Amino acid sequence: MVCRVHSVEGFNCDGLAAVKLMKFISVDSCLVQVFDATNTTRERRDLILCFVKENAYKVFFVESVCDDPEVIAENILEVKVSSPDYPEAHRERVMDDFLKRIECYKVTYQPLDPDGYDKDLSFIKVMNVGRQFLVNRIQDYIQSKIVYYLMNIHVHSHSIYLCRHGESDHNIQGRIGGDSELSSRGKQFAHALRDFIEEHKLSDLKVWTSQLRRAIQTAEELGVPYEQWKILNEIDAGVCEEMTYEMIQNTFPEEFALRDQDKYHYRYPGGESYQDLVQRLEPVIMELERQGNVLVICHQAVMRCLLAYFLDKSADDLPYLKCPLHTVLKLTPVAYGCKVEMFYLNVEAVNTHRDRPLVNPAPMLLRRNSYTPLSSHDQVKRPRLYSAGNRPWLPLSSVGLPPPPHYNICSPVLNTCFTCSSCPQLLVSPASSLILYFIYHPIHLHLG
Image (tube, rainbow, N blue to C red):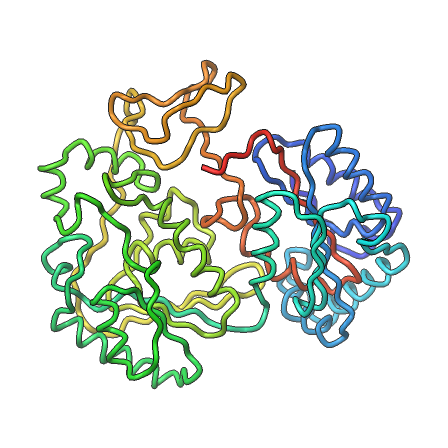
């Protein structure tokens, strides 16, 4: 259930919005739920605590306190004007209405008290857009990940430039993986990329590359310092490294079919899955959140994962995002989304994209996944890797596939209902205090 309040009347202390929103928490459709509301009184927070106690949930509060007038004004103009709360509203009316909201909050606002009334609660308090943090009673993995994420993001204007390395010899041959060098056209792209940086006057730009030769050779032509990240290396294809898709289909026909059935979860024998790659890239993504302008010279699978994070793409769509060679994507995070600009640098290259295949559902689950099924009441241990002849457990009442255990923050890197598009609003609400809470059932969480 989604309930929005579009004017100041719904935000006074006698409003019924909290009662309506509480119904959202009872929807058993995901393992982590995020309630974005003010919750500025102890009475309302006690209602939440009573609810989660009755339902055996855990709760984690996020309080954002902002008392800097300049930050408040900037946030209203940059975030609230484009908010769904104010569709097609005039800027002056938005400013006036939201300032009235703040006055409503001040009447009953009771901040979280780590030394008294709230000393036993788990929460993080963010002051003035990350200038200070107060963390209280972090109790488990989920809460530590929330804190880690909130302490790394910022709301300052910046852009992230993503591109693949220049065309390589293996690209021309249709081979995946490996550590080949740039082709002649790949070297032309490296020169064109240098001209692109100079033309856009990106003097404060940081440049990151993988540790593979084709990415390093692309960066060396830029004439600027660059950092090498091993975790930016291309997805590991295991026994299929340096093979063409035709060779894989002829040599490992079953593996080829398994990957077509579920490309995101399929893991190459001796290699990685896209799901593994997403987890590997988490430190890079957190660093991108906290940095200014960055150019990332990477690889097709890596670029897909980064794009999926910033554009909020699903795990099912991630492996099929188009990331052509010799093209630069400029991502600029804005309130409620991410602005995307594409620059083709006019250097021809082969097309390495492989469209989503048309496959029929298999009679049994013939796939090699990298996730563990959700726990069941019988608590029977089950194998982590699935393959032909090793059928995964399905509940008797289930017809389709068991859902994967999505519970972490920020899809798709940590696949949850808490999307990156809400992050700017989360940290910089100009209210006297913005208190959110995360509710989750500890029995259902798997860290596989």
